[in-house]
Amino acid sequence: MRGKSASKLETASLDFKEAKANFKEACNDLAEAAVCFANAGGGVIVVGVADARSGLEAFVGCDLDAESLRSRIHQLTSPSLLVEVEGFKFSDKRLIEITVPEGLEVYSTSKGYTYQRINTDCVPMRPMDVTRLTEERRGVDWSATPSDRDINDIDPLALRYCRRLLSSSADSLRQRYASFSDIDLLRALRLTADDDHLTKAGDLLLCSEATSGPSDLIVYQHKRTQAGESDAILRLGGPLILAFEEIVQAVRARQGITPVTLANGQQLQIEDYPSAAFREALVNAAVHGDWRSRQPIQIEHSPQYLRITSPGPLVSGVTVNNILTRGSRARFPSLAAAFRLLGLAEEVGQGVDRMYREMIRSGRDIPLISEDQQQVAVLFRGQNPKTRITKFLSTLPLEEQDDTDTLLILRQLCEKRTIKADGVADYIQRSVDEAQVSLRRLSSEPVSMLEPTRGTVNRKLPSYRLRAEVVAQLGNAVSYHSRAIDDIDKKIIDHLNDYGEVNNRTIQRLFDVDVYQARDILQSLVGREIIARSSTQTRGVAVKYSPGPSFPSPKKRKSQSITKANVEPDPDEEAGRLF
Image 1 (tube, rainbow, N blue to C red):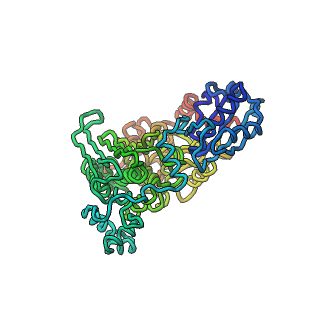
Image 2: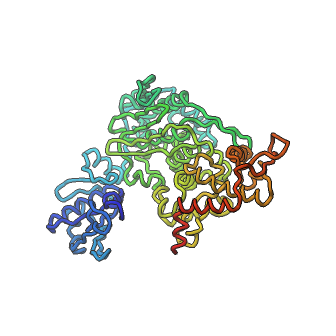
Image 3: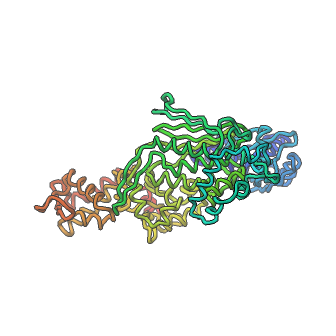
């Protein structure tokens, strides 16, 4: 905790507490903290740490008896909460660790107060929050309960659109659904109750002026600039299935396109906001948003950002810190099932993964997901795409192009020169061991895009960096590219000292880059007069280059190398010398 206060290290599943002096007050305080975690995803409370301090000063110790504390927490909560309490020593101070499981019910203190952990805060729960969490934990599906609508209330266009989606599916069973009678189709989609009245999911999806949600299901506004006036506003009521498609088309109509040509000649059209990522965010808002609050999905669209906000918090147990790996938990399983059967949602709940993958593959930042008790927001930031990332990813094995961990690790290494498993684990939402497995895989054949630094190669958790040839391919997509150019220059200078000349084909082989990237490297060296054209041929990959006026002599290069090491040492190399 050196340099940071304990409070800065708290997470959605970790809390530091300093025990109150009075035993009764201490137990009440810790019982309240345990209720917070039990009503969220569970967590750990470390008692005996002053969260306003940093370093060893933060460890003030705790003399509470573990068994007595466990018993009091059980007595001070309703239903009685069983926690694990253990004492341990750290920095010559006795601390207590309280492990709180995720609850099966909604818990409160003995005084009737209910709390829930939201990020790092313990906040009171409103009656609606208690009802929502109770239904989720008991498996009550609001969307599967009957509505007051019957088959005659269905919008014919909505049902026709469902049949079109099914008939165009690659799944033969879904194609067969398209020819069913209306009532049989509704049953197949699980949108009818036992009395053949529509469920609330059926009401939302297929009826105009749905009674199970707000009058406006989706509100969309477009601005030419993020702080400007709206130039387009859409307020869409039911059916949700038609509103969904209309919003997708509204965003698509306002998309900008960046063309990218891959090394194999394939042309890609990169959208400002990848359609696949936006669709997944919209699906998540539709099937996980809490329609019982009667608030619409809000969409704000400008060249600078695209934000989708849905009512209600994340489903119990899912947080912004585990959303990639926790797995899909539908708030309304019946509504989610209908979206999946219609081919609008992921079958295995990988929608958030897809959002991340599509954004990184298009050379953009990952989506920002935030939540509070009222809403969940997904923010896509508009920016010029880093097309070098798109081009590089196309050279990886297909399975790696679809691996979220691979893409996240690459993105972080475009910003940081080195990473370690314990530093990247939270970023990819994996354990340290899982992160190390991914790093090791990416440094081995057939991927070989990373390498451990020389000073840490024998450690249990080495530091990894991009290989020089990968940095060359990524070019200015790497924030520290200017430093990486030194490594590229050194390899080319060494080659010229050995062979006397270099050409585009040589650069391609040295750094595993395409003809255009090799051209850029050569032009940079020519511009700095390190090399000069030496052949009569002036165009093509066979043009030869020899040492130029600024080509360093071996003695000069050694001197430069010593000076650079003094000015900007590699921390990993320094560590290697110490150990």
